[in-house]
Length: 494
Image (cartoon, rainbow, N blue to C red; front, side):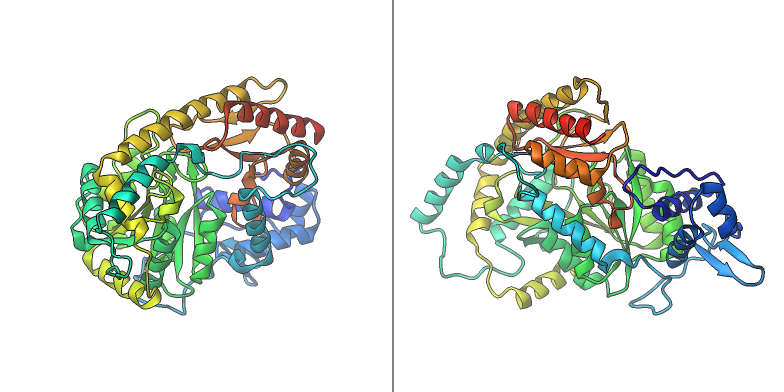
């Protein structure tokens, strides 16, 4: 059992040991019943203190991947893909131990940093104007202000908007019809009774969790994952088991084993332009994910907000478009393609689910501001949505190309990345050892912000060498200068 540790990384040694053993177990390299090396033997082999190995083993025991035994004495792997799957209905007190870091202080600190970077709050003194490559937003100049003002005048002047009215809890009927037409163009069949209007994707997910899972239930989500989304799951009291993402999206070969082990209630995924890696799940993996979902009767939450921001390559069908059983809950938003101010998103699911969601929204939101829904409906029906998407894609495609060139042309520093085929951010690996905390503060001193990769891994146990760079709200000059400042920060922290 070969384990490599790197003392120059910010990740703690016990976490490196735990992560290495965990990956070997999930990949099947360490089979059920395999005896791990004794604490002293492994500690001597790795050149670490015995307590470091003990802590790594305890973390694996907490995830129920290994167990400690007195007779026979030692640590043994307890993970097997051959375990019998037992359906769980409602809350089950015999659930296996799940990840406990969800509510720990380390996560709260991580979320605070994410928020500070997103809103471009200074983390250190800087004599330069800050260039932000941290917030994944679209340039305000791209939003169709004139179109929206025109539609707003039409709505109010023709007395077609009732300022004193209440909307149905399911949403404005005109908007629901508009969304139905839009879905049909994306090969998704949904009746008007299968669409629920909400204000944003996080709200949609929180309501879905409210009616489908109970506290201490388990869900599976892709890793890396947005800290905001992890927090949304945290507020619902669920345990999150993560599954890795590569260039083809979710690594579905691990999925069935995790389902058998943890008996999740839901699977959450962003198959197209995954956040934050921008990976696109291959068509074969989409079919495999759906097949496993059907086999174990586990619903899928599919978030699909950025799929229209595609620059090249074929447009793969959404999971919802491929779903033949009704297991996929599809969530999308107009915040990025119209403007954040409309505060309009939606989800589509079987009628029974939508009926319950509408009842909950009626009980928890006494009144919804209808102006955003009226504007969104008129915007779609007038054909302006396609115009807006084309304008955004032209701008962000050019920015993507500029950012990639700047990274590739940087002298003496190698950045490893896949060119994103869509979306507004780039997931990048620095091909040398860095201290992520020192680099972040040095970059702020030089006048540039970005999202450090370890923010997107629970407990910051991975991702030290990764950066997420956003290009949706910058000029070419800012992108070039931003990369130059990050590169200088790397040089100064070597």
